[in-house]
Length: 136
Image 1 (cartoon, rainbow, N blue to C red):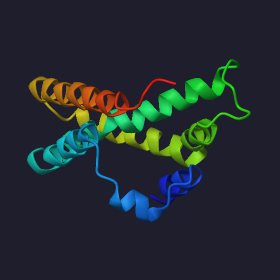
Image 2: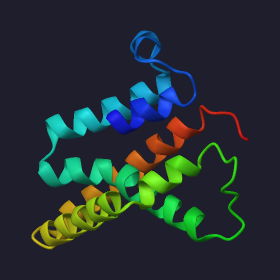
Image 3: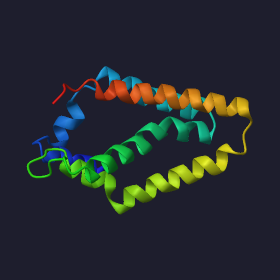
Image 4: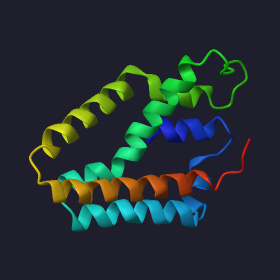
């Protein structure tokens, strides 16, 4: 949370504004979906519902960080990119992948199909969250 709060401060957004700003419908839908999966599914289902965020941010940041066309100087999002290619986040992605893979092989093909559906739906929810921001 500190990372995100500090990042908001770089845009002049203080904690009071964060706490009083109404949550956008897309954010509500996505977070409620994850909470619903957490309440109705097993541990692996919850991890899969979080995977588009965990894996997606890591993959996007890695791609942008490595791309020589990515503007670094004056890029509002460069600190965001650096956060998601930092060693601690890369380790979190690796740990998350290993845990999901190690546990997925213990389940039946029908359960894997259910998990794939959770992942696809969560990915759509994540996309919906980002679509609430106008294109740059």
